[in-house]
Length: 159
View 1: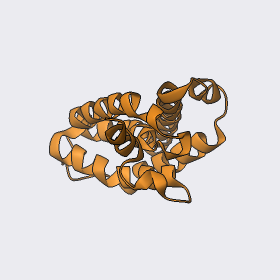
View 2: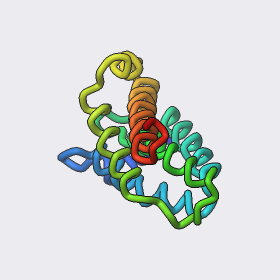
View 3: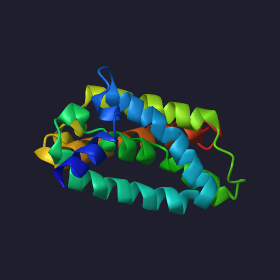
């Protein structure tokens, strides 16, 4: 069972990549989020995020922190919630997933996840799997907020 937990936490070989494994996991999470959005809209992305978060709580404590990249998938998907949710709410065609939203979500998520400003630092300081998953979720929420503000400015809501 420990080997399975380790594979889940590392997302197979991704967690063993020598340079930036969490960035690779977050990058690969974007097309997966798009496919989830296309298949079932925001509700499916939300449910998948909850499932990945639960799997991360179960598995991330089985490997060293830098290898526990499952949290990066959950965090990246959280960062994409405003994009998916907004498109779903507006009734846009499900295959539409505009690049400014996912590029911005990725960049801000990776910046916040790497810099870990307060209060994100506090969220990630919990021991084991809780720290991995809460830290990435907090970075994802921060990125989601940034994406929402950027979209509001871009679409003229705040003008």
